Length: 234
Image 1 (tube, helix red, strand yellow):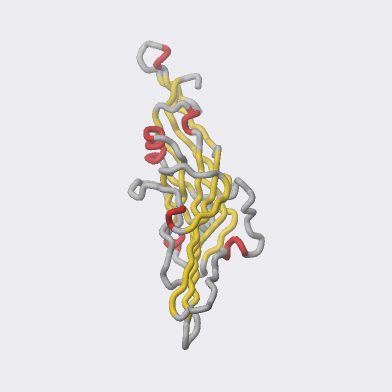
Image 2 (cartoon, one colour; image 1 turned 45 degrees about the vertical axis):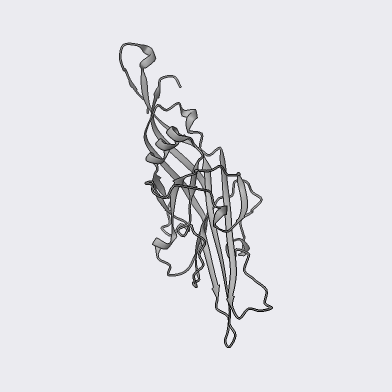
């Protein structure tokens, strides 16, 4: 439904309130990994550079430019006495998506809601839902579309850590399509420049601790619903 607002006497100043649903113009996944070892490891090879999520049955097609994965995996093998060699491997999956907000002609963002569907998930049994939360933020740096690999923390797309944003379950534990209020983020995008959203794993720093924990999912059908004010006729 569109509601027309008459502002002043000039037709040039007439505005309308409209609801617009956008789909992304570009999406991407950044897979960042790191691994290492410590202990009595002389002469032993490093291992664990592959992602269990990608290597499991029916893995996502990483050649698909529309692929979106979010979450993290952390694996630890403590080795065996008397000369243990401790191995750790960490993976972080950061999803990016860009919407053409400028095309709506909005002069004011009343409300913005970001949604998507989780179509494939992998999480550790018994893992608290709080360990699978993936905060949403504005992207502060440019990113390549499609699936790409990076090494260590420097490979992740920059994002502000202090802005209010929605939070998703990265493996769809809650069993429904999530919705996040991203109104404040979209207003900043309009004002400061739009590089898109990033969905970050709970542990956006690559983990180096001695734990086995994972929560990662493939998502699809992202949409951004905007309630906006704009000039009539756009």
